[in-house]
Image 1 (spheres, rainbow, N blue to C red):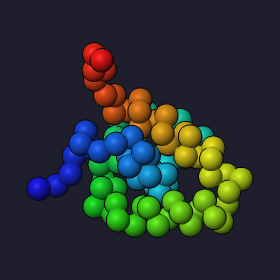
Image 2 (cartoon, rainbow, N blue to C red):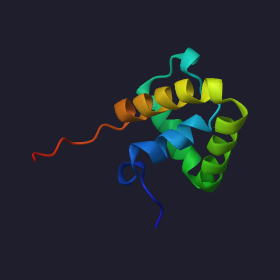
Image 3 (cartoon, rainbow, N blue to C red):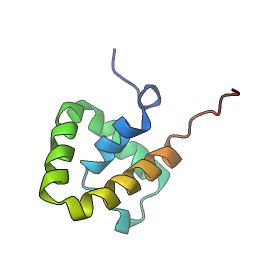
Length: 84
């Protein structure tokens, strides 16, 4: 059974978005972000490796792009708020 984005954590979804060609400067819509993430699920194994490589190769850009990726997927894939 394929993993659904709604079953994944925001950091896992952010890694997929981070590894995509989509850029913050493009002002992507939630629909574009969802599409990129859903299409990127099949290549998910390579995402963590790419993210780690980028963190080492470009640490000055890594934090900003990952922060954007986390914010973007949190907005595109909202989670229900549970009562504690």
